[in-house]
Image (cartoon, rainbow, N blue to C red; front, side):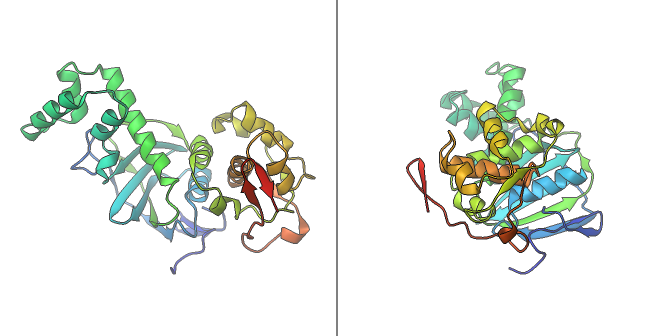
Length: 294
């Protein structure tokens, strides 16, 4: 696919060298917000990964909407001031009703009863659930939050798809808002990705050496747990990628995904002379069970 390089994004009308739900008819949380984009980035997830795009958006703190299309499904992530505040999807499996059923929060017969009411009402599903005393307001909001989060996490499973980022202010009056720090989203999203290989290849070869380049203040919004932080502290400028992935407490694939997340967030960087410069190198590592093989 043609278009901009994967390590570029249009920000405020100039090119930066930094890497970058429901539909209105399905939405039960809110009507979709409106955005009038002033500038737009276009690419493909096969070339510019979602974590890299989110990091660049976070760095420049530009408001707007990330939209990803694949196989007729459209998912949108709404961003403002370094936070994901909303997400929507045209896939019915991402709807609030589908989430409530999967999570066994509302029985199927009760949900079907409310769905019949919606046919003769303009009220959203969450409002009807409260009015019918099926859920308390706090339970509705928490369910919407989990539904939005699940839409965001699902995009980390997509390895291809047309992606755009429209920069512009959002009209948010009827949008149910949450606040997910983008740094935490990047960490958790990469950790949840089922296939480590496409991410690990962007780290370098097995001989790549990583060094830390962060301040402790940089870690506050990442949400790193104790084991994640232990892996970050093992990066010391002398250990290779092979050593970091194969000799720690984490399984190699999980360690590699986290190291990629650290690289995206500029917490670590490559220092190996043989791997400096150029594009991402194919990593020559494999896994067998919990062990890494050459």
